[in-house]
Amino acid sequence: MVVLEKQAKQNREKAKEKVSRERAKLAEVVKNRNLIEERLNSTKPLDDLNEQESELRRQNAEDQAIIDATDTSPSDREAAEARVEERNEELVRLQTQIAEREVAMPVRERIKEIFK
Image (tube, rainbow, N blue to C red; front, side, top):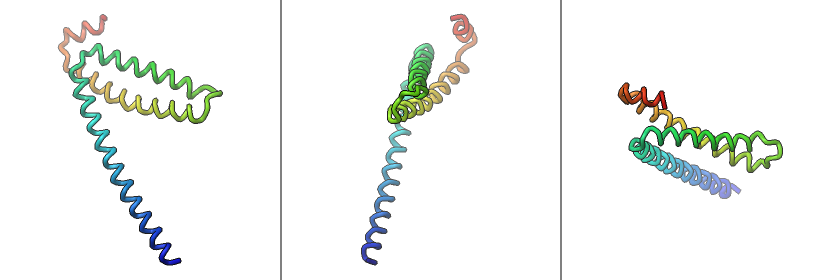
């Protein structure tokens, strides 16, 4: 009995170590993805970034309708909530980039943007 408890404890420790390694790998992948996305967006025109923001908001509105519907299955609701959460994270990054671009934009360009 004692041997089985020790073995179970060792297995739990190994599993915890593996989980922490996998979480670290995932964090690194997310960090790299964010850097690549930021570099990609830094080369896009401001209009494209604004279009991307409005598209993400539209998709969030569609998923929010799924979440709010009373006849939606729990699995569909969870999937929609996960997509909304992921898009919200992307929106935050995108809005930061848009704001940085607008601040760096010359006054003449800002005025053009206002009157579009």
